[in-house]
Amino acid sequence: MSHVDRYLLRLAFWPMVGATGVTLLALLLERTLRLLDMLSASSDRFGFVAQLAVNLVPHYVGLTLPAAFFLALVIVVNRMNQASEVDALLAAGVSLTRLAAPYLCLAAALTVVSLAVFGFLQPYSRYAYRAVLHTAQNAGWNGLVPAETILLPSKDLTMTTDAADPAGQQLSRIFIRRITDKGREEVTTAGMAEVRRTADGKNVQLKLKNGQQLRYNEQGRPEILSFQDFTMQLPIQGPAKLLRARGGDERELTLFELADQAESGATVIPKATLLAELYGRLARALVLPLLPLLAVPLGMAAKRSGRAPGIIVGGLLLLAFFHLVQLGQGLAETGRVPPEIAVGAPFFGFAAIAFTVFITSRKRPGETPIGRLTEYIGSQAAKVRLKRAGAEVGAPAA
Image (tube, rainbow, N blue to C red; front, side, top):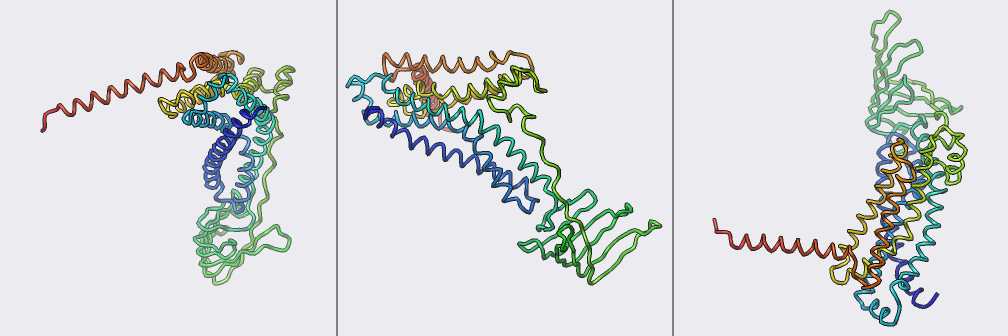
């Protein structure tokens, strides 16, 4: 590596890390808030949410890495172009291909990382996420009663309280409805209650104060019991059974497992679904080496028109590529289109656009079809604004 290569890579490193980190944190924060709302009734929700957020990292890394890499390249090349560093390199005999070479090497390294993320980390983390979520949603009741939350420890028991201490053991204004072993409904309310676990850890004692209990006798007539002190024992519900074994969903399979099962056919998942998932992951990983071919010319073209149009157009192309790959996987799974065509068409279409932009820019650096298109759109928008301004000036006053 020459000094120029190291300089170019050093310029791109921190913007890429910053863009990846900021986007990743934003996505994780938004998902974490939704998870907290989903698991609000669980007394150990913070522990579950932390585990779920960790298992979401590979998924969001796969989403943010291509976009952050493309954004960093456009920003860095545009910054060098504004400072005339690109002009100096081109004048010194450094071609556009040589200028993009270190970024192509970086893209190759990121492709290996992306293959590891899409091919191995995401399948295991996806299953781990589902296992933790299954455990959190079926964790049962641990004997604590959070405030302003309706608990359903079992199908025969409903509990709620208006206020509780941070430990969930000192309660105020508690309501309990349960169905007894004989099938009779029993409703209990109390002004205060104290929650204590029994020595065996299998039951909870509720020491209720200043309350009433409505129950039905053997003849079916209602009876009301008023009390100052009353002790009720309730069972602690354990967790439900564990989640199924990994592999019931094609997204939980690694690249090697997808290829093996698609070749052998010894699986309940259709072959078209397995191939669509396999090709989709490969397409998302192999798109990274194409990004420098698109980002470097767009960054150089941004000297005249600004970098915003290049970033917007490139971002829309990248977004369209990912959505078309996802659409192709859906079409392949339904059997309407072969997986090779459904996923291959968006990939080779994006590759054709990237190579066209790069090759046309080699002859005249900064001159690209996308750049000319954005300049044309900008000029047309400027004409429309001038016409509107002229019409407003020439309009008679009311």
